[in-house]
Image 1 (cartoon, rainbow, N blue to C red):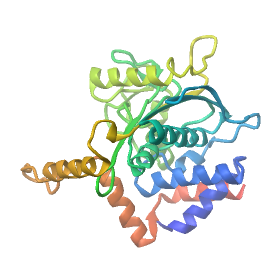
Image 2: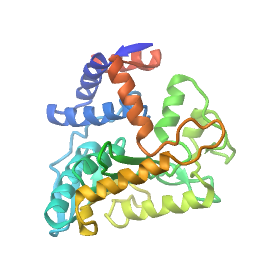
Image 3: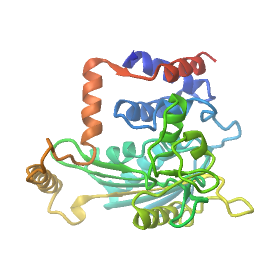
Image 4: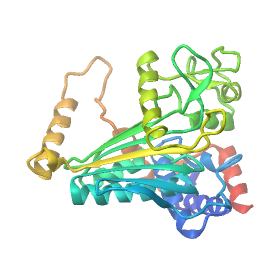
Amino acid sequence: MKVGIETLRDVARRAIARQGFDEADTEIILEIIMYAQLRGNNQNVIKLLGPGMPANPEAGQIGIAKETKLSALLDGGWNQGMVVMSRACEIAIEKAKEHGFGIVGSRRTNSPTGAIGYYARWIADEGLLGFVFSGSPELMAVYGSYEAFLGTNPLALGIPTTGKPIVLDMATAAIAWYGIHLANAEGKSIPEGVAYDREGQFTTDPARALAGAIKAFGGFKGAALALIVEILTRPLVGATRNDDGSKSDWGNLIFAIDPELLADDLDSFQSAVSDLIHRVKASKRLPGVDEIPVPGERGDAHFERVTAAGEIEMDEKIWRELKAVASG
């Protein structure tokens, strides 16, 4: 079914507020969720359904546990991940603009950070190189195991060009956790070979996958990359752990880098990137290939289509459930 974008935005705003967030935090969360929704990213309104992501009534202020002119470690005070990550992004940009480089980690957040391409794009829109890494609870198996141990551990990179930024946003899992939730909510199967059930057998049933573990993408290489993200978002930032060693929060890390640390100037760097992308897209194509894509292009095209139409296709069941959350 088709839903007007502004209608969706209003219902999503009310659904977020119903989960205990004040007006300022609601608007931050809404912007990031709508970014995902309008780009066909599964980190969208599905987050607000089922158990949702209620505000922690005991959350405190976001604080800085450690800081230098180039770095900051945020204590999230058990606030919502998107709110904490937005503050981390602001600080990283400020430090990079002043000193050429900014690195900000966060810990003690009580929920995921949404589509992390949002933050990478934000940094790139400021004329900086953005690197974003996000940890999560134990959802994905290491290579050779079917036990949930790693997070889905996404990473995102944003690079400024003379036009739209290049934005790579990818989970190191073969399928995103919320992609499984979305399939479960819509009554659909998940692809073959991306998740295990609790007995270690591959399953296409999203409910069985949610009780089991996700597989890393790309075999050993993908699992190795996931482990690196785990290190950057757990030991490095000091993500808190339970007595058994399992994580009790989400850890995150952002780098913002001024290209002029190496490039002659921002304009020449952006022009060189744009020229490279033009040459990539002009490469000889295989039979049946209409266009060679670059990171972020598909999401931008989806965004332009739906915003031009003023409405978006949604699963009827999800729309009904979202309205029920919004109405309380």
